[in-house]
Image (cartoon, rainbow, N blue to C red):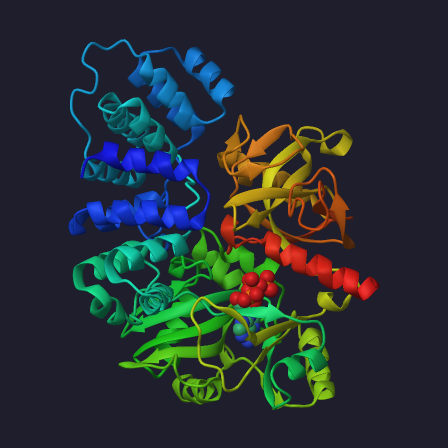
Length: 584
Ligand code: ATP
């Protein structure tokens, strides 16, 4: 496959925003690609090189990207930087500057998809001493052989800024159109993706073996499944009603980190909520699985929580975050001991259990886990009485939990779905106005006085899934401890950008932009309409977006969420509507 063909399809995709049109273009591209290259094409279209759970990170720093353009164009660093400030995007900068480059032999060699992919993969994997220069060499050589249009997309890909706006679901639509046909096939492709979230693999299976190939995709130890998520309501009575006025199972909602545990004999892998491998943060938890789980081959879900070893009490999430470190894990394990609180089992031996009702999965879980101080089943109570649920909720909160997750006992495990068969009841939801929300840091404003030399406030965005954009929703300055104030600039440094990052929509211009990565939890007094912020612009009233009144950082950095997992504009609109209903 010739890369120029891919680049011209990218240009076509970029020019449109309708999902149907996108599907047509993408389906053409998939059909034109040899099966052996389909997986790499699909990853690249998503601005990635491998499925997320393999942790291959793109995201070359701005500085390095500018050096590569300078080297390939033969222009000075200053000239390249000036062009970058003008264009506001590394891709367009490369395209513009390489168009005028002076070399005699333009595009000495046509680029293939394979070469671009392999080179970018090498760049992403290079690390350690001398890797900076090696990365630059690889990249400059690619740019040397690239047409201006190709260079544009190569730069955007390598910096993690491709954002063609092609959602995972659009790729699935395109694969169904290109290789299968029919609405039924589409549902099957989506099912396959939810249990094996590797788009490249799913598309390649569809191309190589058709509907049969897709149907054969099943839960596999070692490949994380997309987690089932919970909806939210504000009272036990509403929950019971929503589930059909029958007995429901209320469980503690522990304030820890969700772990998806994959075990094959002594081999134990722990995946986070966003499906990254985090086994190295919790070697002790992996040992607990080896020692206390009787199923030798299994996929389980648990909430790992920091505990007070002397009393067995649960400790808040912040304590657990001390475990998210690369060095000194041994000491952190001793200082911040944890307990595993199991709440689901998805596979045992050779049997896929996701099709069983929850009540049966819970029984299987009881058989699979030995209950000790460190390994427990999440406390649960089955009842149809809202008052009893309220009482259980108070007990949970007293025990250091956030509230409850209420589950429909007859529900199967629905990978990737957020439905009203799991419903969260949190204490905050009961305040008159609003829930906690998770927002993406997109900018910083310099501080004054005690905050001189650091940031005083941060600009936050919600994720708009329809537009694949991050839209501004609030400026937050309260709730930061001195430690957080010192830590944030360090945390955000790698994402600094001299221009408004692509995919960010904001009328407010901060002193420093950040590429959308860091997610923090905030609480606010209420949601209000705003002429300045762009979240849900025009959705409630023309010319107005939604913003937060009196936002406050709760102290929680949501390391376990990707920017795209932040609270969505849809959710904010729903919260706004719920709030106005209550006030009305
Ligand atoms: P939140 O911000 O409320 O944690 P979320 O978007 O991360 O929400 P949700 O699916 O909305 O995730 O809420 C479920 C989360 O609650 C799970 O991801 C898990 O980490 C946690 N949790 C705690 N206890 C339970 C439990 N008993 N059953 C399921 N999930 C639980």
